[in-house]
Every structure is written in C-alpha cells, then in structure tokens.
Image (tube, rainbow, N blue to C red):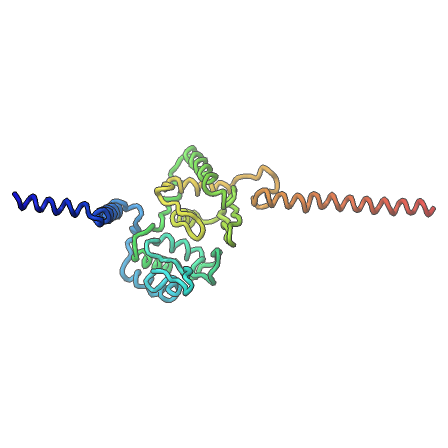
Length: 289
C-alpha cells in the first residue's frame, strides 16, 4: 500500500512539472496529425504510378528542376535567405501537371510572375514528373474529366451550376481576375492572368493548388462541385453576348474611361480646333475683300 502511495505521489509531482504540459501538447498534436493523415484520403494523391515511371520522372527532375527545387524536392534558398525554389513535398501531381503542362515550369528566369508559354515536356514526361513529385509526399492528384465536366446534367442543372459558379466567382475571384476573367494587375510586379479560354483541367488544378500569388482553394474551402460550377461559369462567358457594345476585352472601367478620354474627348478637342482654325481663315478673307 505504501508503495502504491509513493508511486502515485511521484506521478502527481511529474504531472505538475514544467515539461508535463509540453509533453501532453506534443502527444495531442501527433495524435491529431496521424488521425488526419489516416482519415483524409481526399487530399492524397491516389495516382498509382509504376516504379519505372517514378524513376523516369526523377531523371527528368534532376536534369530540369533540381537546380531550383533541390535534388529531393526540398527547396533551395539563396545565400541571402531568399527562396530560389519552394519545396515540392506534398504539392502532388496536380501542381506538376498545371505548372509544367502550361509551360510555366521550367522557368526561364526568376520573377514576380511566371507567364504561360509553350510546354517543354511531352504528356508522358509530364505524367512521369508528376508521379515522382507525388512520391515525395501525399498531395492533390490530377483531376479526372468527370470532376469538371457537366456531362450527364440536364439543361436546368447546367443553368443552375452556371449561376452558382458565377456567384462563387464574383465573391472570390473578381478582385484579381476581373469580372469577366480577363485578368488584372497585382502588387509588386505580379498580375492575375487571363483565365477565359483556359482548359478546364488547368483551372481546376489552379483552384486546387494555388499557383504563384493565387490562394489555395482546397476541397475544404470549395467542394469539387463548386469548382466545377466556377469552370462552367467561365465557359459560359465565351457564349455570352456583350450587351454594352464594344467591351474592350472586358478589362473594366479604367480601360473604358481611358478610351473615352482618348477617343471621345480627343475627337471633340480635334473638332473644336478645326472649327476655330477654319473660322479664322474665313474672317481673314472677308477683311481682305
């Protein structure tokens, strides 16, 4: 009995120790992280890649990507502490498919924004690179066509999806991409690219992975159906007539105001100058006569 009392007293003293709370907190974080990894398959890249495909992707990665992202995708920092290339652990094959499939990667040179350009790799090589990056850590997989397609929906369901997508787009995207998806300027030399006419798969992947300055809209923020609705709305813009006449690319009131000043007021000023000059010449002729 005395032995039990002594053991209980020791445990009580240890629980009151300064490191007890830290130990309990670390144990709780490890437990929550383990449960999240176990029960969240939606965020994991479920693409079944063969060992040969992963090996091919690693060879391509070491030649074309390791200089900025490190030999194991861990990221590289410059001597001044700036990030030369971010870590690719956990970005998944969806990020690779977007960045490499749109030609943004490999980068020509570092900058505030990476423009789209013709892709460097073939579809097979892009899939191999995605398989290798996916092997570094679980991340979003390349979406299937069924994730962003409206196939199988009735006309009423399509219209409802477009309406919902428009509301989501106007709430979350117009501040950067413009109300028509025509893009716009961003701080510190960046810009939001034009997303009208972009392939639906890349729009879905951009929403899922958040490239460059774009925030990440994971499935917890926007469900797969909501992402599909946004894509449906952007597709409907291609068929929507411009009720305002000449829309000037849909770039907004700044462009329209500039056009009004240059064309509208400029023509008025030119006409006034011409009338004044013509009137002066007419009066001179009358005086000479």
